[in-house]
Length: 331
Image (cartoon, rainbow, N blue to C red; front, side, top):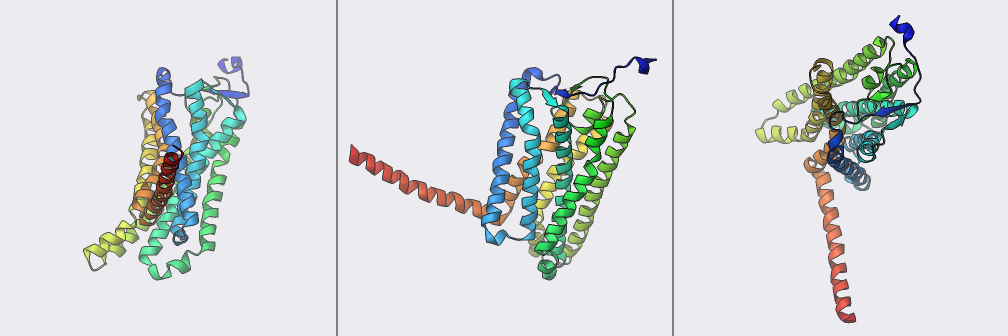
């Protein structure tokens, strides 16, 4: 009888509530989010420009890094502008199609980023375990094929998310207690049996997250075996140091994601605003940290940045001196 009395509707729009329970602090919360967005934009664009201009960086590792930078740019841009509009101007309304599009881009590019980390692990494996064959194995055409496989895998796996969500009848509410259109946050608003979406979400989580972590772990097991047979401690440390940036980026990506996924499934007694904050962290922090990690730990990128700032300073100083003397002459 209760099912008969329900009013079903297909919403033309949803309303994102931001962080329920912390509405009064939205303006203050927006400050670190806006800062993260600016850092993500500047950092990833800088990585792309440096790799493009520096011929010595035209190698598979840096091509994969460029793919990661593009994924980070799309991911952060898919989330933060709308999130900041909620915090700043209370603009909570989002078109139904725009919500599904945002959902697709967020989950698709998270999956792409995970696949890129697998490709980077493959590059480190070949560079350390088969150094003499690195250039012949990871050719430009091979790197392109790997990139296409990563993108196509993610696009096909995530496509059912918006397709299924668009077909569910909605009867409960059009209010999404979140800062963006996260898959399960939208599915929970449907009033029919949504087990297909839930089970498919778990399948994607375990196949992408679990599969990628497995392949990365297998790569590093082989890498460690190759490192341990090196004759000296310095050689072992130097070789393992080439994996440092990749390992830091992996931890920044997977640890918050795993923690958020476990909390979403098992942390039923945790406050809603903490769930949302953690969901934001695992999506927004990697695009901020990745360019910083690779900029600080990668010698070639760090050197290029230092030369860039040095050249800028060399141009600025003579200009300042010339302006100073010209002002004296006019005086």
